[in-house]
Length: 265
Image (cartoon, rainbow, N blue to C red; front, side, top):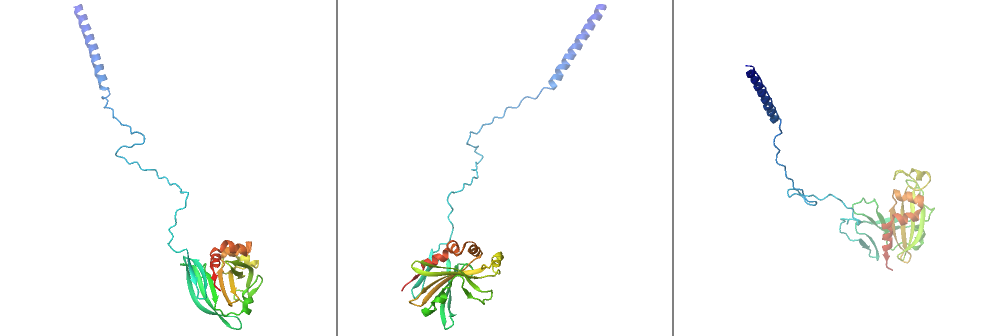
């Protein structure tokens, strides 16, 4: 009987061990990871190429051209020419216009002279903005009247003008294209027309004025006169550097017109 009991005890122990092993195997199976998915195959795109579904846009690089771009300027003639019946002619820029203001009297104390008046200006500008006035007489002026046309620096043209005396502050005689021109700058000392020129007025310099170019033909008792208003920059330059600088650096069109004047004998 004792052997039978020992056999039963061994059998129970073996069954217990088998149960523990089976349970352990079952638990291990429960925590296993799921099977791996097939690896995704990626085809590398060679350098410099792109997949067919993509469009490669060029980089937005702006390169500065070393040459200036052409201007879309209107197609106009470089210049126009005015010719008078008395064989006076001159050129002016093609994009300027010429206003014929007709004949007008000019009193000289003894008789009235007739002057033909034109006005040159950039197209589209006001008639008094950056324009050039042109006066020409009929052949009726007397040679004895020549001195009254040639004002010199220090002269007072009109002591009783509304804004104060008209002063001549600079003059020069030049020969251009074979024609003798007397040039002078006249003006007044007041500060109404341009802002910021009070300091010129305080020192007695003109704050409004014009340059005049006069050519007189004694044999024909005839003259032609060009004049242009001085702007603010010219008035400052006149005070700081003198009339010669104003003439050479600020009045290119004025000089070009003078150089184009031809007067047949």
